[in-house]
Image (cartoon, rainbow, N blue to C red):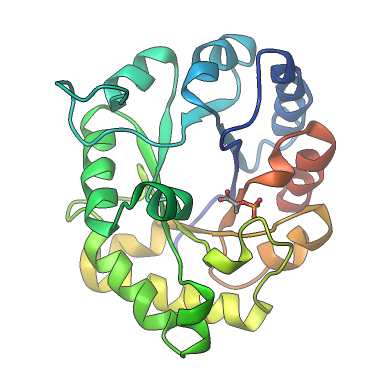
Length: 247
Ligand code: PEP
């Protein structure tokens, strides 16, 4: 097995303001007190620059980027732009982008490649819907999403995968630890088939209703190398216990 440091990343989604950036102070302090793990947080575009200035020790990221570097795309933001604003990573293929903006795994692939081209690392998301799980198709769906979205030349120094069952995001429901372990094992094997031995070093996060109370159990599950955290990353009071559980 590779030597994988745990990564706990927040995702503020369409939440936050200049005033709530104060939450990052406590989050950055907890991250500094946990030097054995990595902590990062994705924030709305408008908060990237002020967040990066406020907590230089914390890795700030974007929640999405366009797949082209520049051009006639009104309202869109490129990987180079978020990098210039202070982001060091981006999320790609989040299920809310898939649901709200109709993005697919090919779009996630192109966005991941654009991010890499512009010096960002990437948290690439996959995960089945509830109907797909109930139909016994979760494993095949995740395999297919990985197949279509992971860039050919991916390496662990810039790619992180996140398994996020859509029905677990923001719902307070999570799969069982056995179900999480099963998908993470399949995801790692799929990565190995695609990128070879360096798949052992790629971190695979679990995301979906991770909170302080369930984080330790989820994070000690085999092949779970960290967590992608939405709701519980919005305040230091909720996010610090997740960071502490990973450390
Ligand atoms: C997410 O936004 O990726 C997520 C997992 O959200 P939540 O933790 O709120 O379920």
